[in-house]
Amino acid sequence: MSRPRFLRAAAVVFAKESLDGVRDWRSVLSALIYPAIGPIMVMVIVGFAVEHATVEGRVELPIKNAERAPELVSFLAGQGIDAVPAPADPRAAVKRGDLDLVLVIPKSFRQDLARADLATVDLIRDGSKNQGMAARHRVQVALQTWSQQLGALRLMARGVSPGLGTPMLVNPVEVSSERKRVATILGVIPLFVILAAFVCGMQLSMDVTAGERERGSLEALLLNPSPRGAIVLGKWA
Image (cartoon, rainbow, N blue to C red; front, side):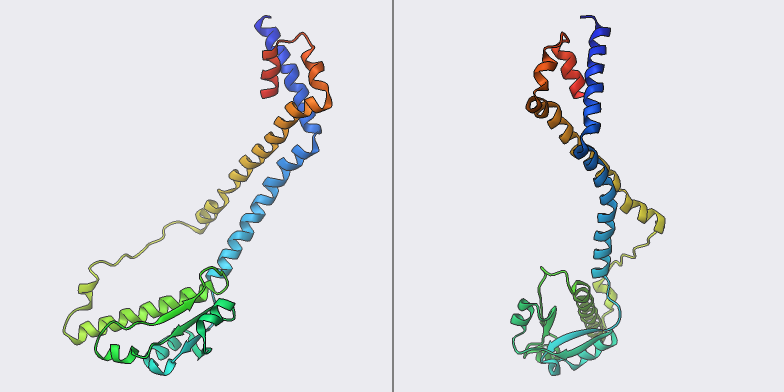
């Protein structure tokens, strides 16, 4: 068979399969649903992340043995974190989900501070839960800030500049506009378009092979005097 007749036969098979594909409502619905639902899913996920990444107002922090660290409690209050009584068994309370986190002050806390030793506190939390994530981050940042300030005061009391322990300070400077950051998030939409084409293509590929055989139309197609290569090319296209 000459090349024009071969290509003509492949085009006929391609047109026939395209028409069948348009008639297949499952393929069309799959192609339309994913691009429509994809941006909505992105908006929901981003909104959920922002909601759990920020916290407004004051935060209540259960502190066990708060009387052992009055300076720390006062500093946390200045950071918008209010100390509240803690349960008798903080680990069990956090594990059950009654509380998001509990700060436990050990018995040797004041003695360690007085001797300028390393003082340790226990921040009991459940990292597998998204609820309270912003509050946990806020408390951890406040505790680290208090620790850094206390370390700087110790160095100054000994006549040592606190800058010696921090030779370099990284100051992030954001130059991108809000429009560019939004465009970065919307860049995920082409992924859903590609996924829609893939899902729709799976439906079409199953229909042009197994579907043809189930309907009994594959044998009739193969009985035509068209070359097998043209049929394969038309179906693949």
